[in-house]
Length: 441
Image (cartoon, rainbow, N blue to C red; front, top):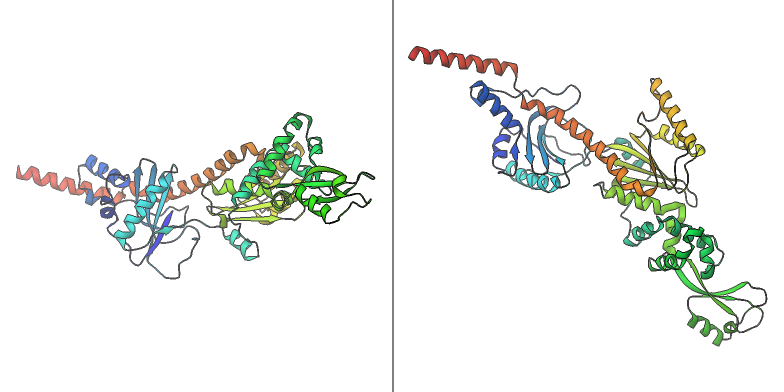
């Protein structure tokens, strides 16, 4: 969407659109012309039925729908706003010019071109604009910080940890005291995945989640007495006189290769942050800005919530790197009651338990039967397994945008019809002309 404020309501919208050229085909204008041709009257005699839709709070002064190869562009001159803009104006104006793109992703380019052309025509600056959730702004005002763009390393690492076998290996390394011996890595994996141990270690190292080390193991008590980043470092320490606790030279003791979590690995595993990185990137790929997302995480735990403002509708995501149980359902239900999101989504790497689903069904049924029941009336969306994450989010965003499209079109489509008064006046004018012609004849 693009929007700008105008000091005067334009009276030449149709003429400006004609100048845009053949890439854009008028829908509403052609409809009025077809009706005029069918009636055999002048198009100028027919007035569009621009009565405001009773289901919206927008008064449309003029509108046009432009058909393109990628969808449609709705051009609307509005005299009040449907929802809060992302950047409120500080100046007063008599009307607002808004462009909406409805169609495939390719409509964005055509919308940008149309905005540039109309900006020049009306001497204004049409800027990108979006609907904004007031409750989301309250969350930010209460101290929650919008997300920032994850680094390439974070995205690569999170994508790797989406593999359950890799994640199990990383968690095994994290749980080891003083680093995990390379030979013990396969023991952290399920039997079918153990043959992948070497490849998994190589991937974890290549993406900076773990680092290789060398461990000195005392031959007397089999305890780890020293770690070093390389054999050369151990040799240097031994040359400097460092010895094992038992008195033996370091290089005479058993030396094993080990792996330990690096800073990136610890960051991504803490509170399953890797899941939030994947979610943020998946939402952003659908056109949602990073500043329209918030992450609430309890350090060291598995509690992870994400709020997203998607076209003015608040979405609450609960992320779980395990099965979502009945106990989780109670706490999530409380969050839904507090925040009242338009959409509540559970994302789990495993599944949502049947008892949890049954609990939500009962709660939803009770909410619909109570006039002032708290929470959302929408069914909770379950995303079970990360393989369906992107497609499920695409469906969610598409449903929100489809609702926006219906609302915009509902307000503008009346311009395709004509007012009864102009219809009758046109017929009377035609009758008068026909009578005059018969007299002359």
